[in-house]
Length: 612
Image (cartoon, rainbow, N blue to C red; front, side):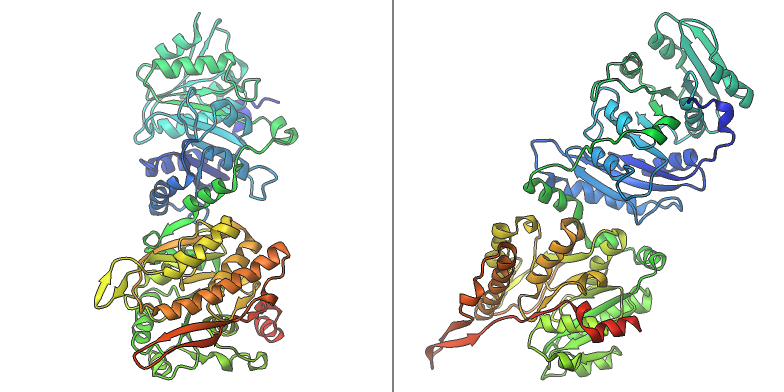
């Protein structure tokens, strides 16, 4: 059922518009065009297309994805949904975007798709023109050439009628602004199509031109002189991938023979909207290695992307969430005051992004608790939290119990021994949670200088990570092999995710959380953020040895669960440590094992407190 232009007067612009761009240049102009086309009531969702050649690793898209995210985040427009903007890194990223807005995708439907188009002969986001037109779930506007909407100018509208005509006039007005629009019908006769007549009655200011031509492409190119853009209707070729139709040939010829920007449009007919047959998914296939590379490119952030604290605060208020910071501590009197003061001043006093900071102490014997209390924050000793559950030593125990006293919907934990503390250690972790609704857990990573003797070397920290954790992840959990620092002590998550997984009581807490949260929420539920540099007190080698022993046990416990092979019940949980001093040369025995605490949501006292 074709819609004549007269019917268009009753339609309203607006709705949900997806703007898919391969480059961030002239982004403000693109958004202005989308706003002019869609109307004031529209919401605009930005989608970035990072297309990686098939013979390269998708992980190479991480840097261009970050650059495009920065441009997206910087755009100032009430119509742009900043918490919905995403970058797709793929061999066929536009295929993923089309898939994500299918009727069965779970996303709200969209009304219009605007694409920065590479032209009729070249792929755009990995898809040819016919695939875009065939699989788009909405009206489509494909724009090829330099941004034609920085200033108004005359526009050539070459259409016959039907649904494309109504959409074409909207596009022409958005491009021309107050300049003239020439409605040109190039055909082998001068008969005026009915839709054209209806349009002239509804829009008398539009110039009508009907020309009989032997070659349609030649006619359009000749008429286009003096116009800033050509707008044409699109037709889908019969094949699944070819552009073999006469209309497609005309479009390709015009694109090759003129430098005038070309805009191709296609309005979905009512029959397509109501009766369209199920369409196959186009993208996101690939090997495990490819999926990890894609995740690395799309879910690796830098803390400076979230340094606009006012913008984060606006997102927080829009989403109606609260944010807590938990500080696990054991004898950190030298640094804990600086950590608290830095975070409190920047993220509570100057910009109220954080709702609470709480110290969770593990029976410090120095002034850690007193210093924290003097800074004006609540302090707890973790053995006193949920006393009916008993208590174990270890940072993981403190984190697990902190869920009971922290009130926020989003929870960030950082260690209290950081000597170069900066607010980015918090806003860098919180930012992805506020910007990306699907992200449940964020890991920090950083450069880790190491002190050797009296000299500080720029790298060399993270020895257990590189010698134990990452090799084991690559062996048994390759889907997590893109995590740069799985053992980092700085991470954040949604309460609903954190309360649903167990916590190991000691050194294995980071390993267990990473594996279990991945099992629950998948790889796309995890992100990582560059916190730049972290300086802290490096542990002696014997301490790292004990840490490794505990982490290995957590890996084995999870491998048991995954593969159903009992191993730990036959393993030794004591470790002989070599003591070699001028006074003593011997083997000492240390019992090292982590207790696995159940998901906090299963604890009755916790559930009762949350209900209150």
